[in-house]
Amino acid sequence: NPSGGALKSPPDYAEHGASEITSIGCHTMLWDFQRNDYHDWVKAEGIVEKFPPIVKSGGKFKLPPDFDLAVGSGLHDSSAALIPYLACFDEPFVLISTGTWCISLNPFNQEPLTPDELAQDCLCYLSYEGKPVKAARYFGGHEHEVQVKVLAAEFGVAEDFYQDMKNPRLRNLQGFVNVDSKYQVFMRQLIEKQVVSTRLAIGNTPVKRIFVDGGFSKNQVYLTLMAEAFPEIEVFAAEVAQATALGAAMAIHPCWNKKPLSKNLISLQRIIA
Image (tube, rainbow, N blue to C red; front, side, top):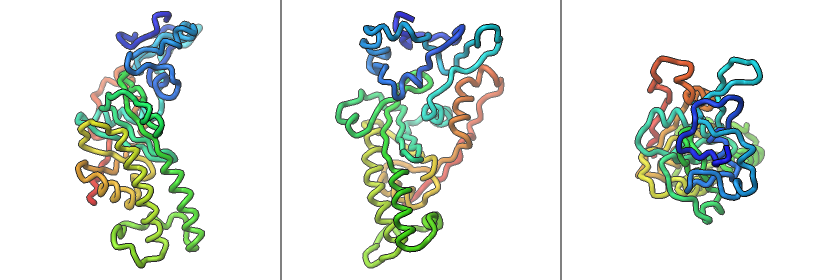
């Protein structure tokens, strides 16, 4: 595809191979988000001529040489996990996908990425529709795992001690020196960093809701502190069964399923500070 494979009208079908837009748009540094095309240097180096044509994420291609089998083009995992939310909600939202990394994804933020944002671990993805997604990463899950082990060893408790904190005491911690109070102090420090990261993804967009999925969606201290930190935004604990696999299936839904998509794909719990 010597023309650069811009997304003006990507084909639905490729004969023997495909370049997939969410993969190009995640960590490759190949894509110019403002021009919606490969960077000039990719063309100047002759690299683009070696790539298969870009197809839509819902596209399909045949396997050579004699296989008459339609297969999906594949998706970047975080981009796939975003698809159920895009299908169910129209108003601006941010999805915080939590695990080792806490990644705040905002598919409604079209602001160009700035050098300052890049320095704070903010980047852009491409959605399965080829639209920019502003994302900000924070190593919060890893920090949490490390600190929980430290506290468990210090107080001689199991490493899952925090899971029983259903009604966390989030105020008036002075005078308490136990594993619960130390954990809550640590979580306040963690949330301060999470808020900075998430606000980078929000930018100037009128976000109405924050959805938290993954490990921290079951952590009442994290959720309550997030609701406290964002009083102007509704915060929800969200659960989607096999979100990445479901999103990938939804991207190619017309190719394999004639039934309409369900709107009841996501379980939500509103969090009140």
